[in-house]
Image 1 (tube, rainbow, N blue to C red):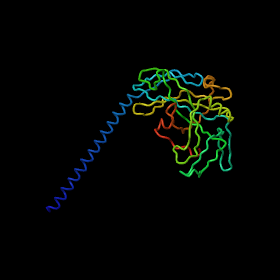
Image 2 (spheres, rainbow, N blue to C red):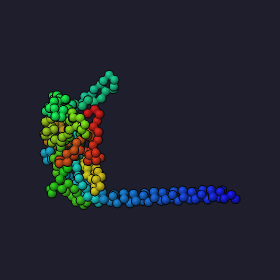
Image 3 (cartoon, helix red, strand yellow):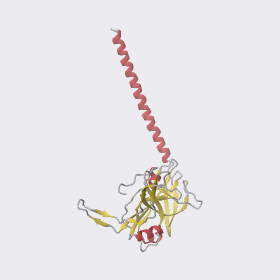
Length: 283
């Protein structure tokens, strides 16, 4: 037999053997990785917190929560998300090119800001943004961080504690400055300020929703569930406590975009996703 044929045949056999060996290594490595992932997931599941809301009450505009951690891991960065949306009045707006949609009243406030951009060193302004009469405000969601009596914001496994916080509500204002991210200002305001602002805008009713969240050691977010939700009749309900006791329920349209302020509250998207989300196109 020709030596070249024998040599080529031997090379082919060797190549096939190496390919099979590589395939088996890859398959075994894949099995090993899947096994390690299952073990890791099992370990992490055994370290998860599970916060139970034992009691919930309002003292004026402050929220009081009795929480019990029935899980195996400590809960960190305990947070209460607050969201509001206009319920009344809503109007049906019908355009000739569409089937129509619900129109939500505009929320606005008097504007005081005026932006001027100057040429460096010349003292001459190239842009002078004239102050408009009003800022348009858009509602959304934010999170506040309740504390216990020791000013702690965490809950170890097997512990029950009372947490308190003043609930804030989010409003966003479109910026007029170039090249900034995010391109809006935001503020968290207490309910008494929100109520005055909304009444000045002829808003009659809003819905509010409060949820409980926390993080684990790896900063993974866990949503523990609904704390409370109700409709506020602004002309009658002077505090959240009064509105909650009256217990009116209604529809809830949840929004998103917020801005960061870690002292008293934080952007909901930043808390949950670790980044800001892009603002809605129509805002």
